[in-house]
Image (cartoon, rainbow, N blue to C red):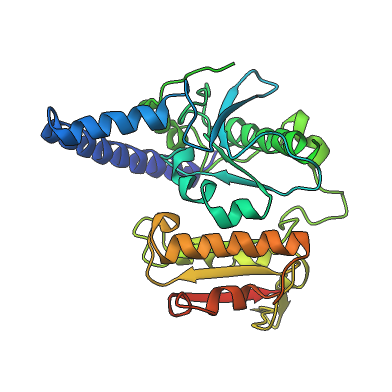
Length: 321
């Protein structure tokens, strides 16, 4: 491996250690200051309500489990039971170092549930009620997530309770063991989903809507967004000519086949938790996508959905068709 590869992994490990240390110290300080108080009792009760898998997750939300081919068990929370093939499936995947609970607002959304969609929020390996991985490289993590998505689609579009500790030391392994820097080798069980040989494997295979909070202090928008449109399908491809790149961008009405980049001017790293802008925009995007799938959309434009009310001044959107 090259020196740059090891440098990236060393930086990723250092960043993870710093994040872990800061979060642990804050948690300890908060717990120490509130011990014996009413606040501590409320925090303890909330911890049981969120993390205990013995009872219903919350009114209307249910604990469920997937067992992967490796034997790994993943916990997820859903709004209901089995759905028929005519219903839609929305799968929420959290980041570091969260759990299904970060999507509680959307799981409880009356508007989203009214669409008839099945809403599912997974605890990624090592988080919440899901089992730990032996190693957190791209093969282990991404193959587990890929198989979980495939199982959920088979379970809810066609159609044992176990607790696992949430160990902070496991989470640092996401950085230490190469998830952010190594190559992903598709597991045998996922080979059936590999694109046809004549398809460009370096592009997305479906329309993409990327949402980013411009006040994010952890990730620079240039790293997260610049050039991402090159990997969008259809005419979102970059045309190379004269040594430069030309984007095929349109701001007119967009149908179900378009991809989008949505920038939130006043939101940060956890945009989907920020009321009313971040969470409101994410919910509107989900409702628009579900209406496109069901054919009930009236305006046909994500731009219209995001810029027709008070959210408009907080949002910029680019459409790629």
